[in-house]
Picture 1 (cartoon, rainbow, N blue to C red):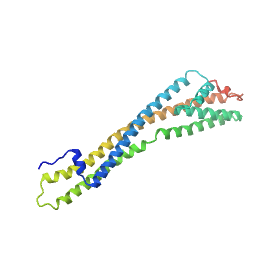
Picture 2: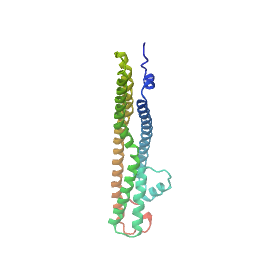
Picture 3: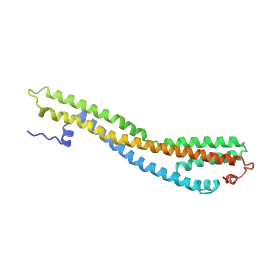
Picture 4: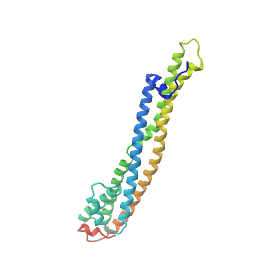
Amino acid sequence: MTQDLSITALVLNASLVVQLVMAGLLVASLASWTVIFGKLFGLRRVRNRNEAFEREFWSGKSLSEMNQAVTAKTDTAPIERIFASGIREFLKLRERRLDAGAQLDGARRAMRASFQRELDTIESNLSFLASVGSVSPYVGLFGTVWGIMHAFVGLSNMQQVTLATVAPGIAEALVATAIGLFAAIPAVVAYNRFARDIDRIAIQLETFIEEFSNILQRNAAVAAPAAPAAAAGR
């Protein structure tokens, strides 16, 4: 008799343990694709908004104008939140009439803290892709080993074993490995791509912190710091 060796038949005829492994891998694959598309559009949005703010920042506007514009926004980019934390701390320390070094150090610490928070947010769900990429092949291999073991246990009760009787059981087990690779490969590729993109964003933010610190250092040397508008010049 000709046996049905289609993927659907192999999955339906597999043992319960192998079916559970396949179902878990399919759920992990679906979740990883959800993370991949969300991270793809999210990082693109972050890059575009960061670049837009940098263009506006270097367009010649004063720091007070930039601060007012950022404060008025309800949805800001990471680089805007870093700017806001730095200028807010800088102005607070100027009102207390601290020396220039204390003003600059306080602003830098505030921006570095904000930078770490933003980086943690940007890197969210990246570890999930790494886990799927590293664990899925082994989970699929477990399903394959279990399926082959189950197939050979069933063959032990047969008087005559041929390739036709062995093939379906082994094919059912190998489907688990195939699904494991199907879940792992896109997750690994996406993880490497996103890790590279996040490194570029981190470098962009760190560069902005250094450049903005230089501007604040020049403003910290101003002797009369009473009003926020005194920090307007660059």
